[in-house]
Image (tube, rainbow, N blue to C red; front, side, top):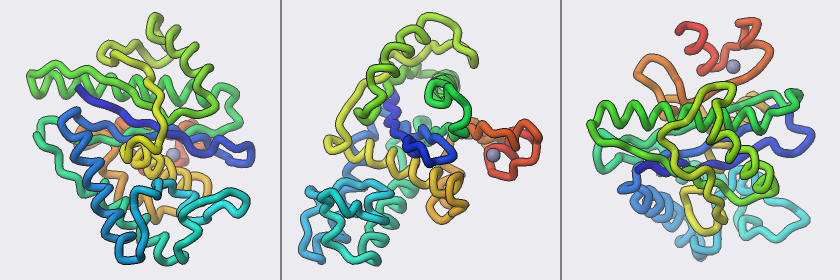
Length: 257
Ligand SMILES: [Zn+2]
C-alpha cells in the first residue's frame, strides 16, 4: 500500500496559482522517511539549544515567520531558518526506499487561479496520476498496490469530501480511479513529518510558479513520478501550455510526448 501525503499552497486570493502537491511513499517507508526528516532537523536545532519536536516544517513560515502570530521559527535568525529548510529538503530528496520496486514519488498540480474550478481540477489530476502510478507499480512488481490519500486538515475539508465521494463513483473529466481506497483521510500536520514534507513540495512549486524562484524545486524535478522519459506526476495547467509556449519542465515533457 502507498500513502500519498498532500498539502496546498497559493490558497490566498493574491496568488496567481493554486498548488496541490505531495509525497507518495510505500507503507514500509512512512516511518523511515519521517525519522530521516526528524533526524535532520535535530542536527540543525539541537546545537542551537532548540527542541526539534517544537518545530513544524512549513516553507513559507520558515522563510518569513508571521509577525502577528506565534511561531517558534521567530527564535532563529534568517540563516539558521534557511539552513533548517535546506536540510529538510535534502533529507527528503536523498531518501532511499526499503525496496526499489516501491520508490517514493512526488505528485503535483499547479493551476492558474483564474480558472473557477481550480481546486477540484487539481484534485482530479492528482488522484488520477496517483492511481495510474499504483497501477504501474502493481504491474511491474507483480504485487497489487492500493493507495490512501492523507491530506492536511484545512478549510476546504468539507467541499473536498463531498465532491470526492461523487468523483469516486463516476468518471471524472480525466478518468476513473481504480486503486485508491480512501480519499482523503484528513490529519493534522503536527502529527506527521510526512504532511510537512508535502508542505515543502508545495512550497517549492509555489516559489517557482508564483515567484520564478527555482531554488527549492531545482533538485526535486526528478522526483516527480516519471516513466524515465516523461514527468507524469506534475501537471501545470496554464494558458501558455495551451499556446505551447510554457518552458517549465512538466510542460516541456508533455509537449514532447
Ligand atoms: Zn508549464
